[in-house]
Length: 129
Image 1: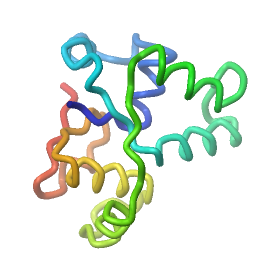
Image 2: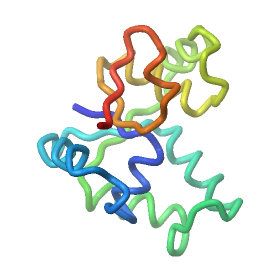
Image 3: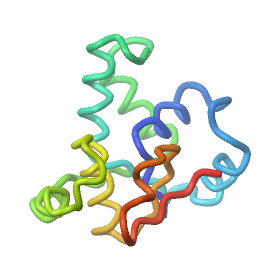
Image 4: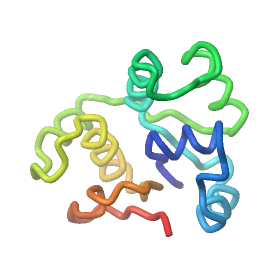
């Protein structure tokens, strides 16, 4: 099982050249066992609305089409995850990443991320290169 960070999901869906061979191999090996946090949907919508990413049409269509096409499952942000994210040490200021970190810890999943701050959290397994 792998939890994809928001940029990982976007790159997998739209520009795989941004992903290393190792990352692509890990994704292939975990086919059907890939996950995103539901907070990723919010982050993609906000990024698209601010013209910081191109979803090639509606962000909703981009998300649903690629979840299905790539066989990626969603992990909802429940009360436990929300509370957990608020209790994390103040290493990362990004609330989206804090929820992704809490999701990974709550469900025992490594995070597939290029982010260099996420691996600083105790007990977080973040993989990229």
